[in-house]
Length: 65
Image 1 (cartoon, rainbow, N blue to C red):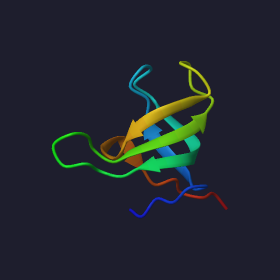
Image 2 (cartoon, helix red, strand yellow):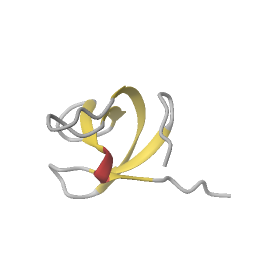
Image 3 (cartoon, rainbow, N blue to C red):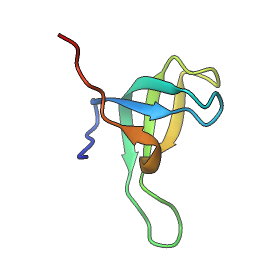
């Protein structure tokens, strides 16, 4: 999945353990041995309006209609 800034993505919220949708604001690329690829997502999450999400928690959003 090729996620870009501005895309709407679905992800599993670590805090609520539920699926949430949000818009990607920033991408931090993977650094070997230090961190996985991360996405800063703006959403209606319970921990605040923005949160960092690991790529392994992201799933594509299927458009309706």
